[in-house]
Length: 340
Image (cartoon, rainbow, N blue to C red; front, side, top):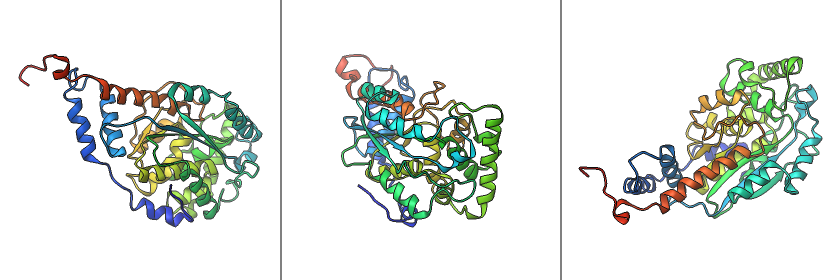
């Protein structure tokens, strides 16, 4: 289990990221070539197995212990009228998660996922970033450390999700600050905004990013200015998982925006991550292009709470199970390709 006391410690870790185990990935490729199917016929499933092996550091890969970590936080930016729901809904949904009544609870049952919920000081929203930075450096580091605590020894795969009214506005501001472009490209309806309310949301993001420009030296500065505690916690979990050799499945727009702050500091920081799905929130497609990430699923979902990551995990589990259990040509007595 990792911990940090400051953002400078996080920056230091980002300079020391472990790389993939290419030997384990090569072993997966060698076995794949012997299985009873035409080469490459399982498409991306074959690549997923190699990626999991590379970051777990062993072959065969395993999926016996998988975790869904959902981080919840509240945002002062809701004072600007950027959400159709009040901040009270964050705590209410956390209660629903704990009572096993949400969509993610059902998906976790289907995927055999251990679900952990991390509410982060829900009674104290971050500051309104339209007027001042959302968090101090120390506050941001503490939230990242909570995210790191979700990565325990022995995990095989980690899925990440979030809950926080107002956090699509935070995600849009993060992306606009990191990748520039027009604010309209990053801002979407979130929980259902349209018309003048959506126009206001775009204005809030555009003006806030412009006002904080001089403070933004790197991705972690961007995180302090615009992020929420749950967003910082996701970034911390992604970072800790890298050092623990735990491959990560990211959920939608907010989750990927959290990961993007690490990418902005170190371009290889997300190499151990798979994006579970592309959200119907329009900024997510732009973000995935900027990150060079290809999602596993495109189902027009925009629920958050880790739902897309949980569904994608089932695909990763199927790929691993198939790789481990499928017979080789020799075992099955099936002739290989002519000339082999």
